[in-house]
Image (cartoon, rainbow, N blue to C red):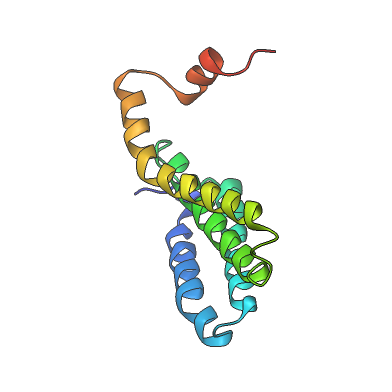
Amino acid sequence: RDYHVNAWYWEICELLRKLVISTLVTFIYPGSRSQLVVSYLIAILYLALSVLVRPFRDSRIAPCHYLASSALCATLFYAILLDLLAERRDQEGHIMETAAYVSFLLNCSVVISPFFFAWLENHNTSPAALWRRYGPTR
């Protein structure tokens, strides 16, 4: 009911993504950097597929879904950065701080976005109209 008829399989994709990232990768590559990289690649692939397929019938769900998927990708990317730069933390501290802030902001946007989109809907305003009004001018 939440998906387009031609995307009837999307809930199965969602369940497979959760299963692979949360369990299979944990058992195959326990405690290794490969575990993070494979999880990141699965999350990126899923995000790309969801953008291409556009499975949601309700257009209000899609932006929240994309934000949540992007936040997962950013968090996994930050974990890879932490793992790569752990031994050089003193030299690359500014990169780690920046990545931490980006990851934090993306994860906060996942929580805030449904309220923002509900507010837009109550005021009969679309994100595109806001962008035209307050976005950069040409």
